[in-house]
Length: 237
Image 1: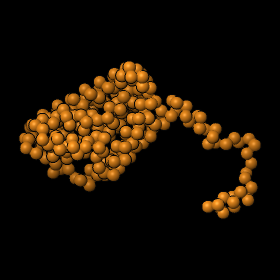
Image 2: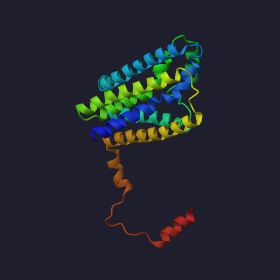
Image 3: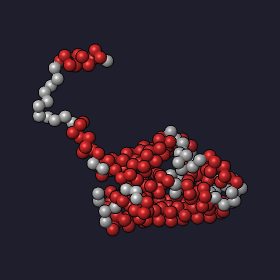
Image 4: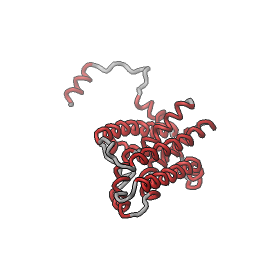
């Protein structure tokens, strides 16, 4: 994978899983009595915390796995399941409970400052975003790709801040139909990323090569089944 392809994969995957657009309604709902300036301050702090969390896990993820005895294929499968759950909810145009629960939103409405929790963690830097950062770090093959990943995390954090900063003065510019369309498109992309991570884990565990002989029959010695066989199948159904 070239540097440009890796950077595009990292930026798109992180932005889709962080999903700052669908965080906007909850952000406004949890700060009904705050001024736009105070909302902007909370958005800045939340995005800085998200940036620090994702960078920390991207850098130290492998060491954490070594300490806990977790293999990368096992984590890839677990992370792909988490991402797929989020993607399925996004395809239904709703925010996943993996990223945000109604209890967390209600608790946030009662808090004075929501910047760190629940806005930064888990709404922005939730399990899905952390898993994606670690998986992308594992896919980096050289120093330039590692640097590209860190820059992508910074770029996604800045983009999230811009979106939350613009929404701090109100969400009249936000079109619900456009948001739902964008969420479904991003959900489809995220589902594809999740399946790709799962295939990478299967390839690392040699599952695909083990299944190949069973799925593809040997060409030698395999003739065309007789006509009676096909009629029998039709009669069975």
